[in-house]
Image (cartoon, rainbow, N blue to C red):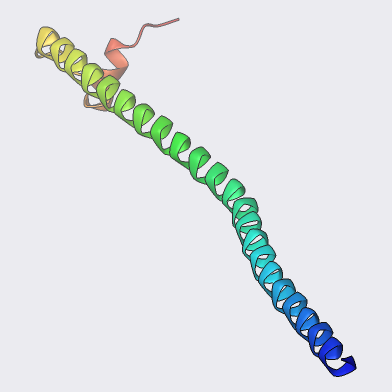
Amino acid sequence: MAEKRESVVEQVAEDRIERSQQLGREALSYWQTTLRGLFALPNATVLSVSSAVLYVTGIAEQSFKRIEALTGRVGGEHSRELGEVPRTATLSEPERAKRQPSA
C-alpha cells in the first residue's frame, strides 16, 4: 500500500511539473508578445512622425515649384513688356555713367 501511495504521489508530482512547464511556456509566450508590443510602440511612433515629415516636405516642395513657375511666368511677361530696354549691367561704362542720376 505504501508503494502504491508513493507511486500516486510521484505521479501527482510529475503532473505538477508537467503543468508548471506548460504554464512557463505560456507565460514566455505572453512575455514575448508584451516585449514585441513595447518595441512596436516606439517603432510605430517613429514611422508615423517620419511619414508626416515626408508628407509636409513634399507639399512644401510642390508649393515652391508652383511659386517658382508662377514668378518665372510673371518675370517673362515683364521682360516681354519691357522689350528692348537695356539693363545697366549690360551697358558699357560711359553709357552707364550717362544714365545714372547725378547727385
